Length: 183
Image (tube, rainbow, N blue to C red; front, side, top):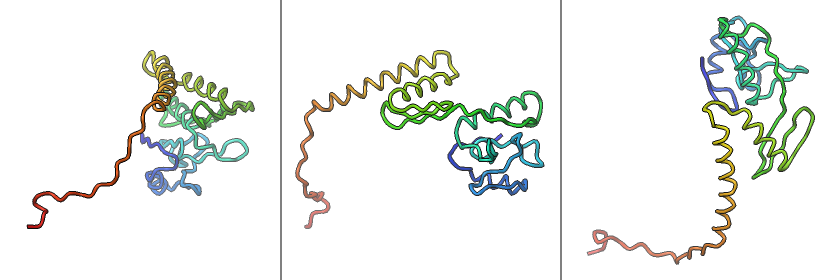
């Protein structure tokens, strides 16, 4: 298993394509079969930003975390069942898109519903908290940290406005050290 994060295929992708004879698209992604395996190599699954797989309408699936997460779950389920990789076609479920565009502002589109501003930001926070996993209490911890950061930032700005500005002194000439002074 190899994992690499980023927004474009890692250098390993080209090496894998050459070693397996797999085709790549214009962006360097490996063309995979519908089950996310490399053609002729059912033991090699390719997911995420390095996989070129057509979705609905023949357009490539977007390079988003939601796609990679669903692909990872698809392949992992097959491996847990004892297969070397997925053996059934992958089907992507588009759950929508969320993006933070400023402090307390976001845009989102979920199943045709488009939101922006603070409501979209609240939606973003809710979705983010929903998908957090791991240590028990993590959602509460993250929520408390967000609230503290939100109010802390406002408090910091108010305090900064009340503080005196540091005075800028005139530039000084460098004073030579004793061993640098002429004799």
